[in-house]
Every structure is written in C-alpha cells, then in structure tokens.
Image 1 (cartoon, helix red, strand yellow):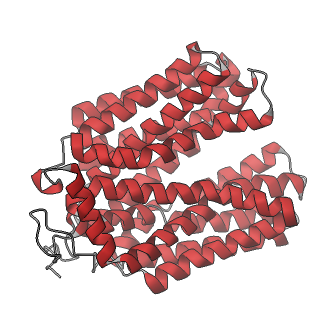
Image 2 (cartoon, rainbow, N blue to C red):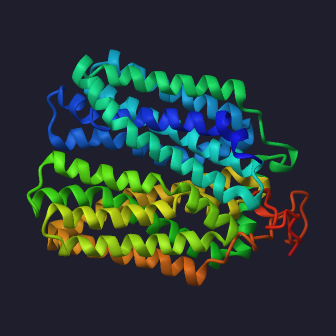
Image 3 (cartoon, rainbow, N blue to C red):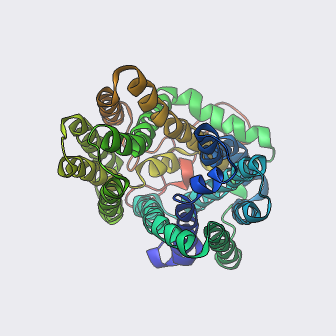
Length: 424
C-alpha cells in the first residue's frame, strides 16, 4: 500500500487529533485551577484522560471485532469531540474530570481502531513505515499543538482552545466517515466473541515466553518514554534552577529532533528488521537519561534531552509495529486492546517510578533508574523477542475447533518477499 493512500484515512485525522490534544496541554491545568481546587485535584483532572484510555483499551479492542473498525473509530472520535466541547458549558469540577475520562475512552477507541485498520490493510513488509509515520504524525501534532493552544488561550480566553480541539476532532470524524472503508472481513472474526478470546489464548499458550518478554519490553519502553516527560522539567527547575521558558525550549528542541526521524525509523524496521530500530532506540534513550544527573547547565540538559529525542525518534512506531506483527488475524481487536493496555500501564508507571524514587533518594537516582529501565527494554528486545519482520508468531487456534495447529500469520502478515507465511 502506497503512503499517499493512507493520507486521508489515517494521517490527516491523526494530525488533527494529536494537534487537538496538544492544544489542551498548556491550557487544561489552568482551566482546572479556575474551579479553586488544589494541585492534586488539578493533576487528577489532567490525568483523567489517561485513566479513561487505560480503562477503555480492552473493551475497545473487543468492540472492533463485534462492530468493525470504522464504527468504533467514528464513535470514538465523535465522543472525544463532544466530551471536549462540553467542557465549555458544564463548568463544574466533577464534570471536568468525568468528561476528560470520557475523552480518554474515546481516544482508546480511536487509537486501537486505527492501529487495527493499519494491521488489516498494510502488508508486513511495509508495516514499519506505515506505523512509524502514524507515530511521527502524532508527534508533529503534539509539537505544534501546545504553541497554538497557548496563543489561543492568551488571545481569546481559556475556552477557545477547547472549541479548537473539539473542532479538530469533529473534522477528523468527518474525514473518517468519508474516506475510511471497513477493513474487517470474515476471516478476521470468529462466529462468537468467546472464540476470539480462544484464539488469543491459543497464541499465548503456544508462545507465552516470547509474548511475556515482548510485553515486558513494551512496559519498560513506555516507562522510559513517559518518565522523561517528568524528569526533565523537575530536574531543570529544582536542580539547575531553570525557568519555565528555558525548560520549554529544551523540550521543544528535543521534540523537533524526535519528530523528524519517523521516516528513517520506518525504513530501518522494514528493510533491516524491527530490532534494528527498537534496540538502539532504547539504548540511546538510556544513555541520554544517564547523562541528566551529570548536567550542570542549560546546555548540558539540552544535550542530554536531545540525545533522548534522537533515541525516541529512531524508535517511532516500533512498539505499535511489534504489536501489529504479533496480533492473530482472527482476534486482532482483542489482542491489540491488551497490547495497548500493557503499554498504557508502562506509560502510567514511568512518572510514578520517577516520583517515588525522587521523593526517597532524589531526582538523580530517579534518572538513573529510568536509564536502567531503558537498558532493560533494549536487552529484553535483543535477547528474548524474535525478529517479527521475518518470523511473525504462528499457531493460532483454528476457529472451527480441533487441536492446536499452525494458522495464518498474525495480523494478516506476509513475509518480507510478500508471500503468505507458511503454517507452523
């Protein structure tokens, strides 16, 4: 599948939604403060969307196989738009938390349905580039969005960014309705929901060692990715005495490096293998994180953060691609829902690890701990997870019953030469 054929169905809506969410980054905490609540409750309002995504991952995956990719995608995007728009009119703190939670559920529906759509429609040999571009476009949106949100909030008031974010989500829903064709076919789903879980269970039983290590790698990877978002601002402000503008410029420059590397990341994955992108990615991120405690100035922290941005950039889309490669064709939705849940656990755990360690022994040890987690991610992927470009997992449970045997490649994959994979 050519990249341009995914432009309107996937990449434009992705850019719109990521920009919409980015717009809210600088304004949502300030909006929450207007209700006169303390910092803990402001943090809860900001975290509510992440909690909604966490709760919505597995149910969203189940809905994919019951209702199809397009309906879940459209409903999730519309839910996100309505929940964001309603924030302007329901001006009560409990409503803010509830609506952000609903927005998180909508985000889970959208993310998993889009990932399943790419898994269905993109051959294995092109999947790395497709998913790295998906990740790269998201990063571009979140890079551009905060500046736009800050400008809107400053010029037009704190309600304006919510209108803009809701409008972006609504436009993404319209584009999805018009340009997305349902990608689920009869071979993707079992006659009954429980049979799809049987497929997932069969994959787990036959390949539990590889899947458990891949899941551990996913948790470690998302922990260092999320943890860096809290360690850099805290270290810059509390240890180096940098102001908000200086910290913001460090994060922005690192993000610019990060978002510029998704094309090389995809080429690495599809030409040389998934590990050629993922293993160096997390090692480089670990090196950058380990540099943080040795920095003593703005330039030093900028250098360390740019190293992390480079590492994360060459790993754009790697964990999504690994999940897509591992997903059984007959139960793609359920598997991707679980896979996304595993990653979101890691994303939630990263900041908690940093905060807990920093409270006990300081921010420097928090940074070293995250560096160790990055090394664990790279080591686990290198030693214990097979290269899925050439050897996707096989062994799905046949839907018609009978003993375990080889099955179609998970995710509908084909080998690097474009041929259907052989049965086990």
